[in-house]
Image (tube, one colour):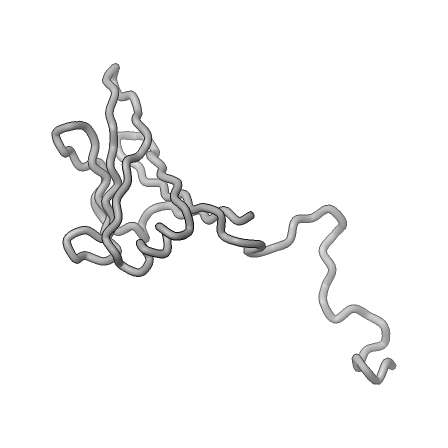
Length: 116
């Protein structure tokens, strides 16, 4: 027995197989992608870590999303986070008339964090 480690030579940490990716979060947060669905389509917005921190802190924040085609028409969308003093709220507007594609909580969205 090794008196420094208290072991008989075995590793205390299980080793991952050669070539396997490390489990869990690794590195620095690079971006976050939020996805919601309406009208049988999934709409996504990718934001940076600073803006993600603002959203998580309950500060109002908004951004234009990608335009998309629906039934031969082109639509724009706007993502509005924590609006009107409602922390955790998300409304995704579409078109020029302010139609609401998604109304709810941003924590209901599919959230994928991307690490460098």
